Length: 166
Length: 276
Image 1 (cartoon, rainbow over the protein chains, first blue to last red):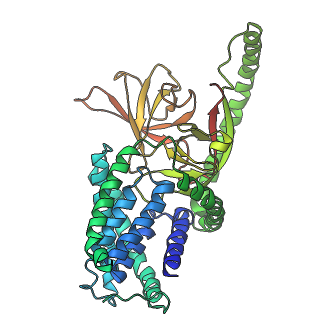
Image 2: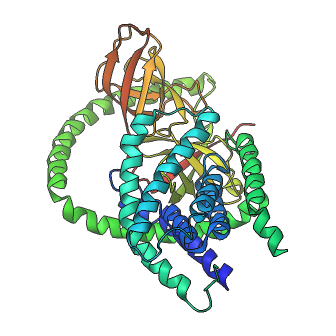
Image 3: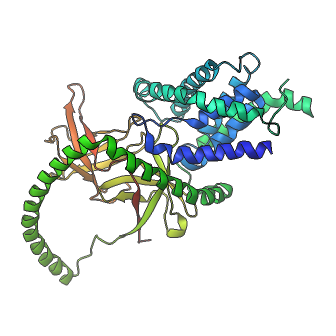
């Protein structure tokens, strides 16, 4: 049941992100809702589930719109795992937590993506990227994150979804 | 078992990381054939995406004009001026057209091998776009069943869009020319001995260089594909926006305004070569 619900969330998110959100770009930037969801799940559920959810969220993007197969999968998984490590250290009821983590994760995502692309000979101008993509996307994601966090926070409290995280 | 899982989580993550890095290396230039599960999954999702994409477009098209009435008014004036000019041009061209028709007949009479009709057009609809902001990729609802191959050129009414990157049974990924990974060889429409290469960037703009540093190009010159790369000759790419020549470089660099509005792509055409 839990697996089914989470995978439905991921698929629905992907469908919306690749279609509906494309029509509402801010300065040509589309907010990365998949990243937000991965980050929030790993804050709420810890590193193992965070990594797993990150893996599948990334896989979904890679199959359809990925340029280099595996890049998103790898980055989401690593982000989910590493942010999930802080699960016990963060205060989950604080509304600042999701905003902060989402902004940091957006920066890390692009940094990792840049390094991966660098390895595979796809060179880009990092300063240009920082100015025209990363900053705007970090703000977009941070603004969206409290709303998504609220939904997910209530979702993980549902009786048939609830997990014991010691 | 549970203890093993707890201790082994880091191991699993590390192992998967290594496998993924290897997979990325293998799939770098776009794979010729995608795997079976991907294909099936793609075929299931594409129709749904198509419906939602259309829905989004409908909402956007309803809302956008309300906020953009000023620019629409400005456009309207500009277009009506352009229309007058074009009507004049049309009459002139009509005369040349007749002349061309005669010459075509002549060439047919002389059994000249025709360059045209080597390509078949297949129209397709956009089903979804890239979710990240790194690349400019979108998916369309045709695939190998319709005869689409990897690297088939994709165009629409206004000009060149890009090429097919990966193909499934009835869906495929298209990589646009403004993507930072693609490059196109072009020639200037006015003076077709001036050739060069343009490439996209993360900012989704086109820039490139001319091979001849003394080429006399001006802002507003139209670029078409030269036929030297995978794209067939004579597809409109865009207009020159800026020309610059640096002292220490041997090349003349240009930045180009693409003819296609990449923000609003809905219907595209895939060119499929008939030969082979």
